[in-house]
Length: 215
Image (tube, rainbow, N blue to C red; front, side, top):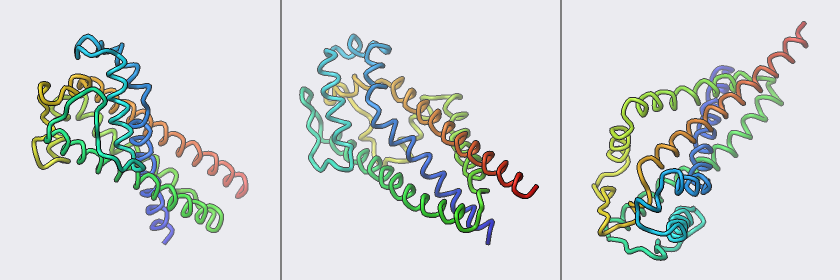
């Protein structure tokens, strides 16, 4: 029973760490603002920095679970296929946000139960291992061939080809180079590693305190 409750709590905590990393990255607009200059998006897209930021902000606002409006770019046209794709993307983002909230609430309840009632903290070590294992595998695949990984990701999550944008119909794609998505993936991985390290450090603190008590 001890292993079971620690494993379940570790899985919930792992979901929280990963979904938190994704949610934070998706809403961290300074990353894109930095890439506008770093990736020279203004010159490559042919749009002004002001237009790039306005349209990106509209896209991020649209993807929020609190936003129920239809997507409208301030200065760009959009095809019907593009609209469908962004609707599907939002469904994924909103699902991740719900996982983030649910795993946070359930995880907090389980953590308090295990620490306060059962005086157990093994789940912290298990969560740190689980949280790092999955992204590590993905990081290896991405490092081998980012473009292939990017295509495979879209084939897994989308059952159509609306994600294949054409600049003349959906010029927003000119503002979203592949390198930006690579930076997003890197940020998610870094945040997951950080969450894993924090879990393991807290586990070590509890382990040392428990060792002193038993001694």
